[in-house]
Image (cartoon, rainbow, N blue to C red; front, side):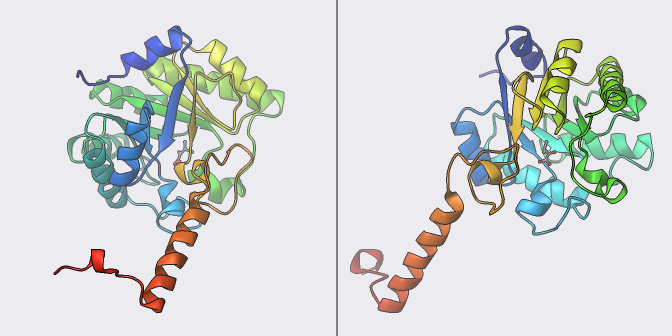
Length: 264
Ligand code: KIV
């Protein structure tokens, strides 16, 4: 089977076929997502909250992201995997950003990187020039939580909507192959999608985007709180608690391990 490259997603957009993206952070998760036919596996820095127990994505490091991306790649050798550049891995200069993004492809086996923000199209140009495909990310930017103050919808007023559209255009012109739109009004999601030729991947940005991305733990019903943009397609958190309680009960009752679990 030939390896998926970014041109596939441009063709999917042209054909009006929705692109399905999910976050993953382990080999077991990536194997399940690949087996389910998900198009893109995003090793999102939201794993800092879902898997590592932090309150924000700020503490997530390059080393942590490399570690998780290697595991994701081992679980799904053929999948299209995107490495989410963590806080401070692309803010201190273009050379360091290119070097860090290069590590994502060279050391961890990612196919592309994602980075937040619209302020620096030159950075995207340099990454693409170096042969590194880039997914941009506009709207709510979780890595800016310390300056923005709260997680809120972006682009509700005309000025911020126009600003976002012009940033999206600039990122496309700089060579981004797709753009994530996080928590922008559905109408703005539609406008950006109509304006750009590259696919838009929405999270909380309406059904008109070219595709959707969701956080795996929200989608599986593992996280106790469900954000408005998410839907619980399962209740795995409850299933885990029930299975573990049954295990504990059987150990305490002396019914596990049974003879069939015991080596003769
Ligand atoms: O880290 C993440 O999960 C993300 C998605 C919300 C797009 O960046």
